[in-house]
Image (spheres, one colour):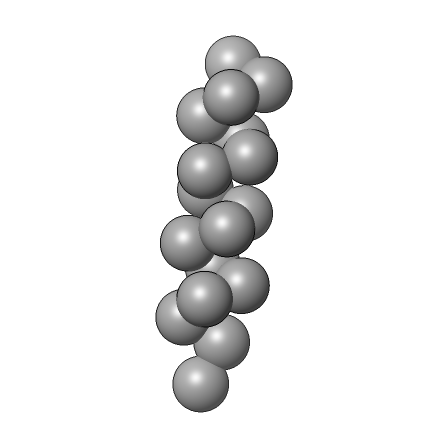
Length: 17
């Protein structure tokens, strides 16, 4: 389960936007 990784990636992308 890579839910943590997925959520972390989304969080980072949101910050970059």
